[in-house]
Image (cartoon, rainbow, N blue to C red; front, top):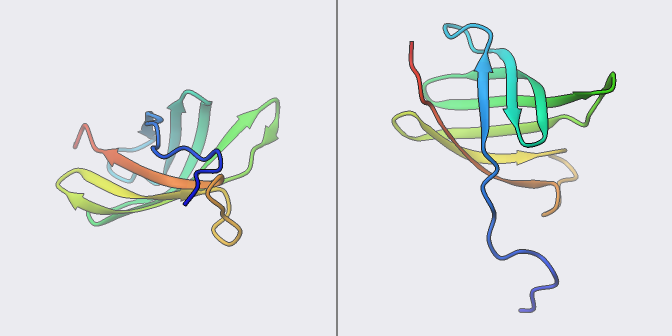
Length: 103
């Protein structure tokens, strides 16, 4: 197999999820190297599913969907994609989310 310019490893892209309410984290803000994004979705004890959308210059960006399962206490792993139906290796990837505070 020939590597045609695709990286063989994925670099971490850290982000912070700040829910509006710790008791019902269905919406809030995400802070990362790309800027500030809004999110909506759900976080349960077993899984996470949310959509992140950057707000830039009054224009909504393409939504990025995250889906993951609990892998160990406080840690979720899953995949993100810009579009689940047409995702390619350039528009999807893996993520690990670690819960750092539990109220």
